[in-house]
Length: 184
Image 1: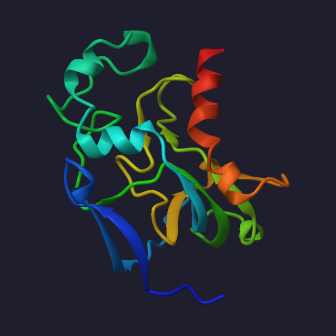
Image 2 (image 1 turned 30 degrees about the vertical axis):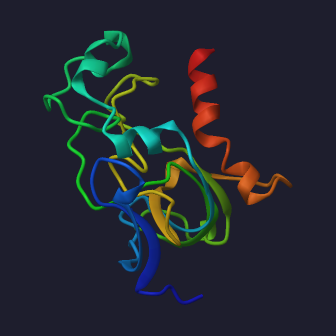
Image 3 (image 1 turned 45 degrees about the vertical axis):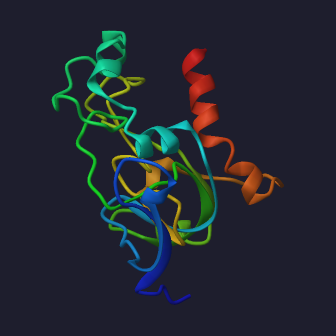
């Protein structure tokens, strides 16, 4: 399959209302970096991170209220408005809960992954932090997500799925599952 140079995407142009989301059909298709995969998106759910990132809800006052043992307290950046505490760059493609098929792999990823149907875990964790620390980059917030025809994600975050569920049904799981897992 030939991967196009351009794709359609819903692009977030700044914090605010729905008027900040713009449909574009001239967005460059991402290229997978080392350790990453390129996914042709079949479905993408909408979750609170998508809404909160768009409206600018993630402020330092919220982060400072978090318990320090989960890795958020003390992040630099003042009153930044992203999930993980780093400055948000616009334009941004949102969409944390992506589902699709791997169509290309970056350096260091097994070529056999091409063709796999995957569900994307949106929490890209820093391996230097404790196992369940929340000091992460969140797909659809600090890095581009699934409101597009294609998205790049770390290979470790693209989980092979063999369930009979539809793509739309699977797109409801990523964020809600990880939230429930954290509560256990």
